[in-house]
Image (tube, rainbow, N blue to C red; front, side):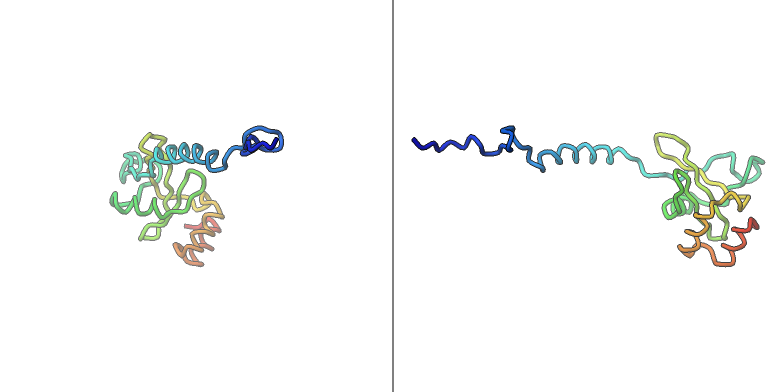
Length: 142
């Protein structure tokens, strides 16, 4: 008697059903996409303590919301910190405010030695600073 049963179809050598790779990946991909949709892009939010005349730390040389957002969006990331150079050639550092809106405030870096050398190198490579500015900042001169 000949059997036409497909009892072995879809089973591995141990007899257990095999999982379709797409069926395995797809549910995980959906959850990743859901997580990514909840991510709020960084937003420039100036704060009062870095306003001119506040006498608290370095002043914020960024003049407008649009300029601040452009500098934040095109900056060089170092962990959660973001560095960029204003149109006037001032190095600014953006710091996260740890808010649900993912706000970042900025201030001018007053001590060039506070800029990591890897960031200086990347600013140079991105043509945001000249070779002379790179050398000067690397030596800790403003």
